[in-house]
Amino acid sequence: MTLSWLVLFVLSILLQFGSVVAPSTAFALVSDGGTYSVEVADNTTSASATTSGGALLDYIGDQDLSFGSAGTGTFDSFLRVQASPNERGYNTDGEPEFDTKGGIWTHAILVSEIPVMNIGGVNYWELFADVNDGNNDPQISLNDLEVWFTSDPELVGYDSGTPGTFGGNATKKYDFSGVIKINDVNQGSGRGDLRYQVPTVGMDIPANCSYGSTTCTTYFVLYTQWGLTSSYNSDGGFEEWKVKQYPTPALAIDKGVSLTNGSGYGPSVTTTVGTTVYYRIHVSNTGNVALTGVTLTDSLFDLVAKGCTIPTSLAVGASFDCDYSDTAAVGTRTNTATADSTETAPVSDSASVTVQVIPPPPPPPPTPSPTPTQTVLAETATPTITLPPTDTNGSDQAPSGPGFGLMLALLAIAGIGLLAGYLVPTPGRLRREEVRRR
Image (cartoon, rainbow, N blue to C red; front, side, top):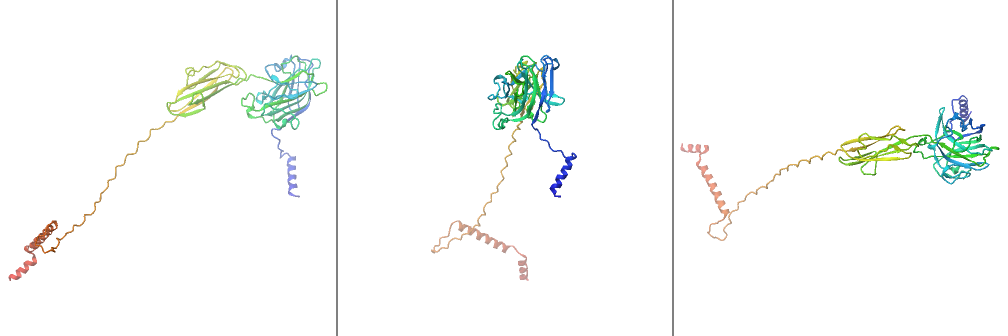
């Protein structure tokens, strides 16, 4: 048995007993399908179904109180299609394609704008369809529903290149292809007749695209097709997909400090003592409901005394700034601003100013004393005695000049020495004198 056959044999045994599990594909496309019915006899009842892929379907009769206000409320319509006997289209800010109707009913929508419902521990995107089939022939079928992600809000070209691929400019996340039968017994438009909840299990959803996030940049594209099933064709009324706008109050705050009035605000500055520093607090309503009871405080300053005007309410998307200044003091000062409202929890942000203490310069080093210098005198030349010149012309005139005087002095000294030696008796001389006398 060769080694390769041995390896295959061992792997087959392990797989048979479950010791090795083949890896699953992470974040795979969620495929769904089948035939389902959510038809009702009249608008006092509702019907539900669950697809093989886990999607939850509800047709909600407008007089059925068991669903409460599920089909009513404030909606954002983002895709409208209209044609007969069938219709299809997708939402975009680009040129509408197929049976898509432009205007305010069709537009790009971010992933973070799709409500997420948690049911039994599973997350679902909640979508509503406003079905408007005629009263004489209210039956209609939903045959295709696809969810795509893209970074292009003006995405176009569903059938460019390979049909149904958007030319590679979007990524499909969910695909239902089948039959969902509907009996549209509700009257009028403007409500959610069909609730379609898409399971998000296994989908690679960007972390910054949770519901209500303000930093999401990924767009949710819904492609849909209606009326392909016999006897369940569309009759020319429009079908409109929308999302329910749930109250999501949100308050945001940003505090900065700068050395320049009106610009350059950041979380901290470093400066010198006595410098004027400028603060700015920016407060905004980032939710979808108006905020009341708005307050703003600071840990170090009385903001009203600093000249700030603080509104007590903020409409959706509204904001205000609080600008003031202070004089930098020694050390690091961090102050925290806190905004609050009746509808939200408090939010805070901080800014700090650091003043560096510059020590005085050290005293100059002492001037060194001058090193005494010794002057070495040159040796005095040995004096020389110059004898008077010999009279060569036979003159009897006595020589004169300083040399002659010196010579006379030396001769006198020598003579005195000889005389002294003669006059002072020495032991030798005394003995000779004594012998002589004898």
